[in-house]
Amino acid sequence: MFQMRFLINILLMLAIGIASVEIPVSGEVTAFTLESETSNSLAGVLKSGDLFLHNIDMDEGTFTSIQFQGYHQSNIIGSPELPEIHKLIEIPQDAVPRIEIINKEVEYYNLGDYGIENPIFPHQPSLSKSQDPDDVPFEWNEALFQTNAFIEHELISVELKGQLRSLRLANLVIRPI
Image (cartoon, rainbow, N blue to C red):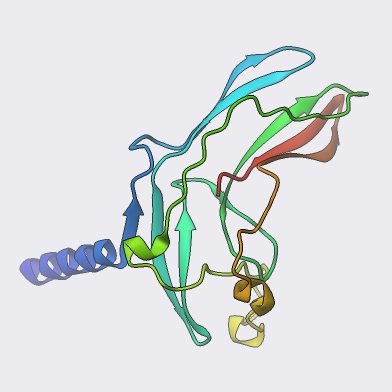
C-alpha cells in the first residue's frame, strides 16, 4: 500500500512539473526593496525573478497563466491576468504622489519560443462562497485578445486608499509585464 501511494505521488509531481514552464529571467527571486525613505520621497529597486507559466483548460479553450512566485495578478475583469507587485505605503497628508522612473531595463520574450501558443488567462470576477461557479459566465474581452499589440499600462502607479487613523495610505502597484 505504501509503495502504491509513493508511486502515485511521484507521478503526480512529474505531471505538475511537465505541465508548467519556467522562463528564466534573472535566476533571482522577484523582489521590490525600498532603498531610501524620507518624508518627501521613496526610492526602490525591482528585481524581476523567473516567470512561471501553466495551462488552464476551460470550456472556452486552453489559456496560459503567467505568475511571479508569491505576487498578485491584475484585476481588470476579462483582460489578461498579468503579474503585479503591490506595496502598501504611507503618504504625507497634503502630498500629491508623483512617480519618476530613473532607470529601466526592458527585455522582450516570445512565449512561442517556450512552446506557449495559448492566450493569457483573462481575469474572472470574484465569487462569494454561496455562488455556484457554473452559474457565473466566463468573462473574456475577445476584442482585446484579437488586438495584435502590447497592452500599455503604467509601469508604476499609486492608488490612494484612504485614512487609517492618522495615516494616509496608498497602494504602490508595479506592473513589470
